[in-house]
Length: 128
Image (cartoon, rainbow, N blue to C red; front, side, top):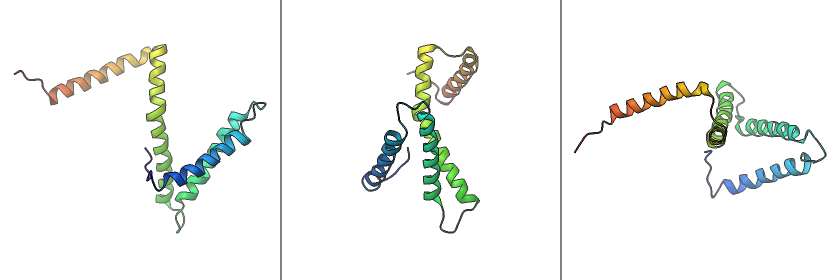
């Protein structure tokens, strides 16, 4: 979770972001007559994210490897959060609905067996 102060920072940040999202999603790009509106929203989102991340993280002293690496880390962290919190549960739901690929069964079973074996070794069940 990207952490910000929920009382001090979020109200200000959320107001600006909500306004921006509304303007681009509903006013400019979601024309029901236009077949490419979703692609335009994706393009606009990429542009907005790039401008914001570079603008927010630009060091006063100028760019260097570390500061550019920090930009990538922030983007990767956001990506990982979305994958972990939204995409993975969605994929699990679809696997439950449609079934899994057979190619995943064997390696997953090996992994689960290994984890179970290691867990039992570390925490053996002892009788009374």
